[in-house]
Each structure stands twice: as structure tokens, then as C-alpha cells.
Length: 74
Image 1 (tube, rainbow, N blue to C red):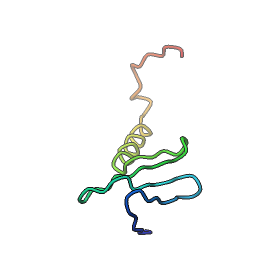
Image 2 (spheres, one colour):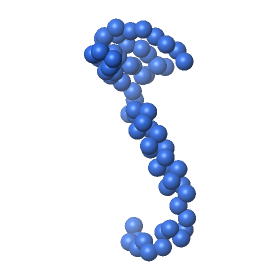
Image 3 (cartoon, rainbow, N blue to C red):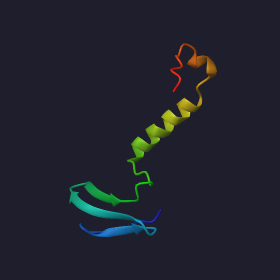
């Protein structure tokens, strides 16, 4: 893990097109601004992990789980 020190309004570059800026520091909380291309998803870690859990659950759906769902032809 790379550990960097930054002050408010200073930034870190990730690659050529992601910029992380320190927006505010209050006590033990740091607010970050993240500029990234639209095709790069940016999530808090706990949200990312929840998305991954849901994706794994959806991937485990069995054909029998889908019985009773109506095909509307679309």
C-alpha cells in the first residue's frame, strides 16, 4: 500500500485520468473528491462489497427458482 500525505485542496493522480482531491478535513474525517471517466465505477468499499455479494447471489440462481415468472415477450 502506498501511503501519501496531502493537505486540503491537494490532489493525487491515479494513472492519466483519475484525480483524487482532498476536499476537507474535519477531526478524524477526510472528504475526498474523485474525478474519473464515466466508464470507471467509483464506490465506497462497503457499497462495492454489497454489490459483489448481490452479484454472486444472482449468479447462483437455479432454473427452478425462475418457475412462475411470466415471459412478457420483451
